[in-house]
Length: 272
Image (tube, rainbow, N blue to C red; front, side):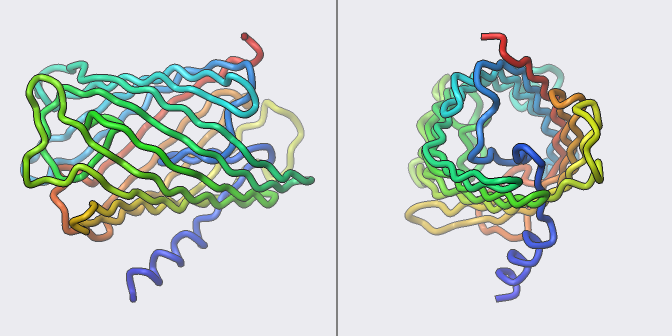
């Protein structure tokens, strides 16, 4: 019971919003990037491996395309030092798409819903029970997101189904391991700066708290993570995220559940 009280308290304390759209670090909101825009995103994950003193480094570069106000597409690459500790190795890639199908907008508030999916291929060794198609497993995911924005406060939740396939290079999932999981997230945050807007050139600072979880099916093993973050937006088009993710509780094998993320993203508007 204490765990679930903590879950609710941390999300309420960490509420965040933006005047025009909500942006989260660990998850995507129901809103899309601007139509006819393109973007580049570099996500750097530095995760502490539990069994050794090494740091697992994962680099995920992305090309992003705002097709229209309803649809956005990301092409992702997966690079890490997992296979070779002395060098970065390309492990695979994926495609992510999100379609916003519902909006209820008003002055300084909105409620939006979207569906999303990802397909990925990966050639890394399978070294944990956690299923993660964004950099570790070949497979797919499909799910939905709902996001509510009220002035400077936003809360977003998602639920999605994960299914893992065998990785390339004969890296197969063990016969005793689960291949499917249900993931969930609850994210919130608050716009801290500026206190009042005078122009698009002002630096925005957002703080946020996100809760992330996974339940393996049908075995029932699970974990829950807590992820505080700070975010800066420059000239309304360049974004820098700094966050930390750590495990609140869990009973599945995860080689490196705790660590930092540093992300840089830049958008070009009306280029397509």
